[in-house]
Each structure stands twice: as structure tokens, then as C-alpha cells.
Image (cartoon, rainbow over all chains, first blue to last red; front, top):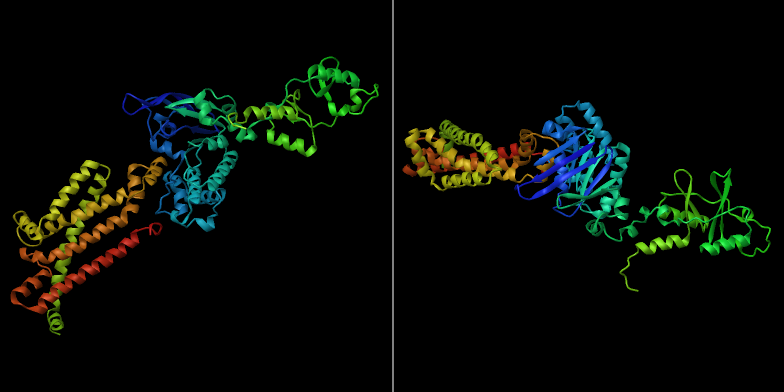
Length: 379
Length: 210
């Protein structure tokens, strides 16, 4: 765990480039520091491996004040990837990746094995690339090696300073995907600095939005999108971004929370009355077992009543029982796909305790989408 | 024909003079390397200091070689010592300047990465800066060597010996083959030295930089 405690940084004793930073980074998380240039995001990151020393305050790694650790020892235990890659042009790829473990005097055969496996991990096979020099590799390949080099000494923490900013969009996307995969596989704590909001949202478990040396909001991407803490964050993240990233809209965001219940033994006429009264087209058929637990046993939409005149027909006879349960955190895109594939009108949404918490209908989806669609547009 | 006769008749003396020539110029360059390369490293990251040092070296360079030899005489008397001293001063500029340039040409990103990975200052110098700057530094050494071999021919005037003896004696006696011998051998020496140092440079430069 990394912790910043009352951290300040000033170069002229007057203005602070970093002002009173207090935050914690949990182990294994991928944290993105994002903000406009000059907001202090890179400075913040470089204080973790003491490339920049705070003017005031303390930074702890695993509970230990990093000032008490030898600078070079500290840096060797933290992976470091920078925008300009910074591979050593006079060394082969293998030598480049081995740099830190060899500085730490690790066993040469072990280091060789590590290089072999890391090159596989970053998708540049050892046999083909190990003996080449950096200039023989493309920008994207070089940064893959940069990532491999950062991983070579098995650090728990990796710092990445705009590592993909200089790459073309396609390569950037590939490397982002691979970083996510690596993060899932290796479970390292990663601090990632970028000015690109899209990148931040794509990668971050949590995102720290920085402005003028302060963290304005430190939250999960979803929270940031849905509840920006102030206008700056909202502007910076982009007002209509939720619309651009539909995978962040969850089932619970689009469901209709008012559930109108009906007893399985009600007749069609009674059901229609209930619908009219509550201005809805769908009813949840609930079986009240021993008066305690409510169990959803079926769903009845207004379309089911079509052509039924027999008053002896009860809800339990016409209700749809093979409904597909939607967990509340399912992405909207997935929900829409399921509804389309199975030709479903009404999808009940359940929480983690299997309680019915809402129903998704075409109207509820449209309602939410119209809210997040650009409002300023002229028709 | 006369030239070839002169060479074959004076073979042993030519060898001695060539050896003297080599000793004078190479000692001077070697000393200049031992002093100049560390100076270059020391001043590389100090803006004002490097300007001062380069200015001094530039001023030395503008002093005519004959005058410099003369200046060195009160200090070292006559013979090869003042010659080596003067040549050493001449060789300093290209060596310091190229060392400086070589180190400054190292990509800041490379240095930043090295620092961020936990290399000490000394490790950065020997594992990163020297290997990356070596071809530029060697370029300076080659220039210094070739100029030194050339200027050594003048050192005959302060009785330093070397191939310059043939040229000046030859001029005094109007002995064409003698002049030519001195000139040709010092030129060949310069070419050969440059070629050999070129091989050394190639050897020291990583394939990744070519």
C-alpha cells in the first residue's frame, strides 16, 4: 500500500506545485493520475520513487517512510516506464531488460530465464528479438520492452509516466489492452499518469483527477462519470462521456425502480385496473410465502392480456415464468443484447441477494438514454 | 628516383626520427586524453564552467604553434619536453569539446530511465554515458592525434627531434628528397594513426549505435 500524508512540493517556497496531498493506494490496484499539463500528476508520481523529494510531508510504502530507504535501492524495487521509453541504445534487448536485476546482482541464469519469459509476456519472442538493438524495433515494440524492463526485477509497484502517449492510436489501444491483461495476471500496484481521459477511464481501477497540485476527486471511473464532484471534473471528464462509454451504464441505472406487484390469483380485469392505476404496462407476480419472503414467480406484460375475455383466467396462468434474471451490475450493452436475442420486453433486475429491485423496459432504457444524450443539439 | 635512393640510404635514421615523432605526438595526446576526458565529464552538466573551460581551450588554440613552443621553452628548456607540453595544450580543445558534446548528445530520456531504474551516478557514467559518447570522444582523439602529428614537424625548431628534422634540414640545404621524406612520412604517419584509431573507435562503439 502506498500512502501520501500531507505532502507538499514547492520549488520557490512561495507557490506549491503539490499542495497537501493525502491519499492511499491499495495494493494491486491500477491507479490513474489524470489532469491537464502542469497539474502536478507527474510530480506526484515521481515522488514515489524519489526522483522528486517532497518539500513537506511523508510518503509511505507498505507502512515504511520512503525517506528511510536508500534512493537507488528504492528505485530498483519499483518498475519505471516513461513516455520516451529510454531504452539503452547501445545494449541489446536482452541486456536492456536485464539491467535492474543485474544491478541487484541477481543470478545470471535466473535473469536470463526471467528475460525469456518476460519477452513472451509482452509478445516479442526471445529467439527473434533478444539480440536486436532498440533502433531495430518500432515505437510500440520498444515500449513493450520498456514494460518488460520495468517488470524484470519483480517489483510490487510500477510507475508509468504517460507510457503510451507517443504511440499511434492503434498501437496505443493494443498496449492498453495488454496492460490490463498484465495487471489482471500479475496483480501489481500500478500508478499510471496520463492527460488522456479516455485512457484513464479505460485503465483505472480508480482515477485521481488533479488540478493545480491537488487531487480534486479520487474515485472509480463509474463514480467519476456519474457523480463528478464539481464543475471542473465534469468539464474535464466530459459531460457526455457516459453516452460514449455505454459499457459503464449498468442495468440498475436504466431500470424502473417502481415495481407494481400482483397476486398470482388476480384475474385479468383486476390486473388491468392495477396497471391503469399505476400507469404501467408490466406487473410482477409475487408469491407471498408464509407472509415473510416475497418471491417473484412471473412477469405479466400488458401484451399478455390481448384477446383474453375469460374471467376465470388468473395471473398465474398467463404470466411469463421463464424470465431471464439480470444482475444489477450488468452492462447496458449486455442487457440490450440479451433482450434482443431472446426478444424480451421486460427484464427483472436483481441485487446480489437475489431480491427484485427493478424492471427494465424499453421505456426505462429510452428514458435514461435521453437524459445522457447531448442536450444542446439542435433538431 | 632520388627520393627512393635517399630513403634506402637513410633507412635507420628515418626509423629513429619516425619513432621520435610518434613518441612526442602520442605522449602529448595521451596526456591530453587523461586530462581532457575527465574534465569533459566534470563540466558536462555545469553550464558556466563548461563555457569558461572551452573559452580557455579556444584561446590556447589560437596561439600560433611556433609561439606556443617558444612559450614552453622557459618552463621546460629545449628538447621534447616543451614540445610535448605545447602539443598537449593543443590537443586539449578537441578532446574536451568532443567529450562534452558526446555526453550532451546522450538522450535525456535514456539518462532519466537509468536514474529511475536506480543506477548510481557512477553507474550512469560508465554504463550509459561513456558507451554512448565514445564515438564522439574518439572523434576528438582522432582530430587531436592528426593535428599533433602535423605540428610535431615544427617542434624540430626547439630541438625536439622527429620527422621535422628532415624537412628543416632539407630546406636549409635545398635537398628536395630530404624535404619530401619528412613530409611524406609524417603524412603517412597521420593517415595510419587516424586509420588505427578509427578501428579502435569501431571496436568500442556498440553495434546498436551504428
